[in-house]
Length: 254
Image (cartoon, rainbow, N blue to C red; front, side, top):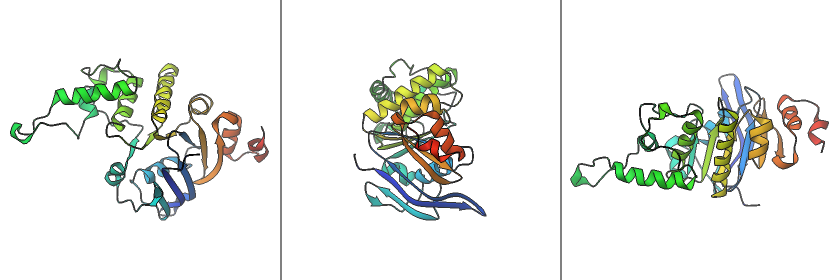
C-alpha cells in the first residue's frame, strides 16, 4: 500500500472539562477515499479542524509526508497542501462561479496595470479545473445563488483543488442534497482520488454514499477510534453497530 501522506498519531483534544478526542490515530493515503463516520458528538468535526489547523491538539503527532509538523494555523496547513471544504461551503450567492473560485485569491495583471483583476485569466484557469473534474456543464457567469445544491457543492470542491493540493477534507458534502446530486458528488470524490489526492469525507449517509464511494471507513465513538473497515468488505449494519457501541461480534461477522 502507498505510504500515508497525512498521519495523526495519538491525538487528544479537550475543551475545558470536555474531552473531544482521546488518543485518536488516522492515516490518509494518496489515491484513496477515507470516510470518517460516527454519531453526533463523536469528535469528527474536531478531528477535521485539527487536520486543517483550526485547532491545535493537546497531545499527539501530526505527520505530513513522513515528517512531524508543528501546525501554526489554517494558512500554514493550506500552504502545505491540505484543503478543507466545510459544510457551509463559504460561497457568495451574489457572485458567479469564477468569482467564487478565486474569492480572496484573485488573479491580477502586472504592476503597470495597477494589479487589475484579470477576468480572462481566471476564466481560463476555471475552465481547466472544471474540465479536469468533468464539470464543464457548470456556467461560469451564473450567480451561485441561482444554482442547485449539487452545483454549489461542486464549485466548493473545485475551489479546493485550484492550487494543486495533496489532501482534500470534505465535511458532509452530501448534506441536504437529492439522491442524484449526492451521486454526482460521489463521482467527483472518486475523480479526486483518481488524480492521486488523499480524500477524507465526513458523512452520515452510510448505506449509500459511504459504502459506494470510499475505500476505507474509520469510525469514531465518544472521541476515540472505534473501528476500521475496508468499504468493499463491510455491511452498513457493521458500521452503524461500531458507531453506537453495539455487539462486537457483529463487527467481526463476514
